Image (cartoon, rainbow, N blue to C red; front, side, top):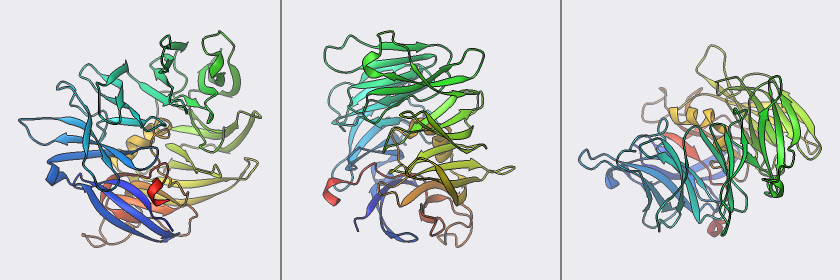
Length: 409
């Protein structure tokens, strides 16, 4: 069976690659250092995989006081030199969240990157060639910023503050097209898998919000948006990678946590309630057969990871608790913006057999340098619940590629 790569940041801020092989709880990890912090004299943060799983970007921060730098590097999965593709200006050397210097979202083609970084005056989305050639193009700045690539890579949908704007990147385009300018009722917008429609939410008269769909061909025409689902408050939603369904949460005002997880099928209008309790983040199984929810535990810093199963008709058929853990600062950041990171970072393996998290698992997941004492690290757990979480390596954050590299499939 082909090993599945997992990129992680070690406890000494190096970039490691673990090759996961085996089945269920009977898995093994061959861990190698890809970029060593001491050799490169740089601290590395937050890996981001290319769509084909053959390249990784990683933020790199200089430790030299006389020459401070904050850069984005691109490195191949296997052998080959790392190259700088983006540099922060000298007045923008601050991270944007705990352990997160840049947010990177690869274009579907793998030829470009959308990079959120600090530019001194605030945050900005920059379009960067994956080759590192040419100058970055400032697309938009401001905060908060959420965005999603069109599946064909020819447009980016950006939600900045109260604005929802479509940036057409094709040659000869007439520029950005404003879709909505009202108080925000959602965070990250979403595309249908075929790119023919977009999803967002708008305020409902009298309170609450409405999840709507707009056809891409009708944007800018003044056509009415199709109303799909009413909510009692703002929404976050994540589209399945296998079909058009959305996993929808209702957010508490000013809070990253959501409630009332519902599966929405835009094709039929069907709404399948799953649970109604606090949730930190949701992620789909690659085949759409389940959603994974991270749920805060009452009077505790622990989070529970639960799998919620769906049958072929999209009906809820049961659940299984997979893990309890205390998240790392980096993993907590990802959960706070789960709907944005779902566009770009995969915590479920492309084969669907494993899910990864970072922090301190209940039971520690095995011995290490400190025996059986508390050990923070990057873990994986079989999604079928056949074994408890097990630690891959000491580290702060880890991600699977969206697809296996072509040379190993």
